[in-house]
Length: 48
Image (tube, rainbow, N blue to C red; front, side, top):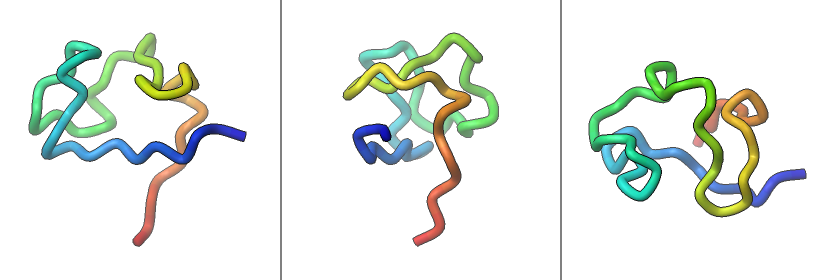
């Protein structure tokens, strides 16, 4: 179970070196959640 964080491409992850406007697919595979440290591959698409 992960923290429930949602990656928003419009915001990116400035603290993680991901610029605003970066699609999730373009984030490097080594990226981890800034909240809980989950790996990129552990994220699932959000359908809201």
